[in-house]
Image (cartoon, rainbow, N blue to C red):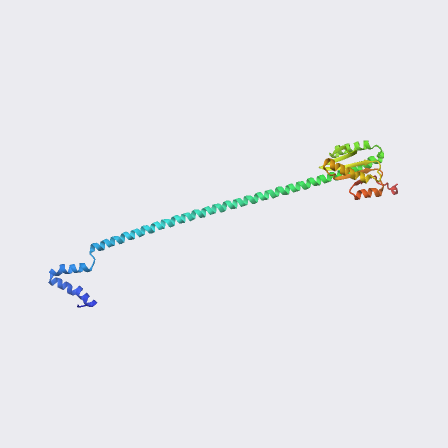
Length: 256
C-alpha cells in the first residue's frame, strides 16, 4: 500500500486532480462518490447546523429564564429590604412613643409625690397648730377656772376643736370608763382631763388604752393628760411611757 506525505496529498488535490479531471472527465462521478464516502454530505451538515442553532436558541432561552428568575429574586430582596425598613421605622416610632409615655408617667409620679409631700406638711402643720391651741386653751381656761368644772371644760374644748380646727370629738363609755376622743386625719387621740391626779393615774391610762383598742380595734395614736395638779416626778414617769402631760407652767416670781 502506497502512502503519501501531506505535501504530496496537497499536490495531488490541488494540481494533479484537476489535471486528471480535465484529461478524463468521465472519472468525475467516481471521484465524487469517493469524496462523498469520506466526507459528510451538505444536507447532513445543514441538519447539524440547524440542530446546533436550535440548541443555541434553547440555551439562550434557558439563560433568559435564569435572568428572569434572578430579576424576580432581586425584586423579592428589594421588597424584603423595604419591609425591614418599614418594620425598623415602626419599631423606632414605638420606642419613641414608649419613652415619651414613660416620661409622662414619671412626671405624674413626681407631681403626685410633691402633692402628697405638701399635703403631709399641711397635715403636720395643722396637728402642730391643734396641739398648740390645745395647750393654750387648757392653760388659759385652767388658770381662769382652776379646772373646777370638768364637764364645762370638756364641752368648751370639744367646741373649740370642732369649730376652730375641724376635728371630730367623741365621748363614749367602755367598761365603766369615760373616754374623750379626738379624731383627726384617721388618728385617734385619747384626752384625759382631771383637776388633779394621784399615783394610780399611770395604770388607769394604760387600762383605758387597752380597753379602747380592744373595743374599737384601733390603737390610740396619742394619749394626752391635761391636769392642773400633778407631781413633777409622776408627770415625768408618764412622759417616759409615751403619755403627753399638759400642766400649768410654774409662775416666774422673778418677774413680779
